[in-house]
Image (tube, rainbow, N blue to C red):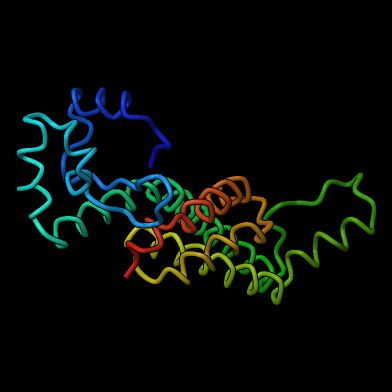
Length: 197
């Protein structure tokens, strides 16, 4: 999604074949996305003065819906992939931590110079209840990324993005933080939200 842009930029994009009569645009002052060819003053910018625009605009709502989903998918693809990676890494890390907590093994030895209070907090962090909660959060992150990538279940996508912000998993936190913020920004764009099923 780009914009706002002026007529000169649109002319250039039309010349570069970056937009056509079916490209969805949001006219200034409107909240609706419409095919460029359905707006007379913009259709006039197309080759042939908009003669082909009427045919493109007549392709119907199905073509506009497909284009809207494609635009929305391009908008959410990268943050969705980041969430999927963060959730998967978090699950792997959490399962390893759970094994450590259940078996009592120290998979990561504590440095001897670590104060006893810090050791206590680290062991609490690696405890079974904490790890199970962390696994649940990472499942939400993973489901949110998958929902976003499929443009289904908008609420799950938002929940997964928020969970990524709250996760605090040292294994995947930076990826989740970026994916969560980016995902929330994209998910609340009107064209993206409308494309979800």
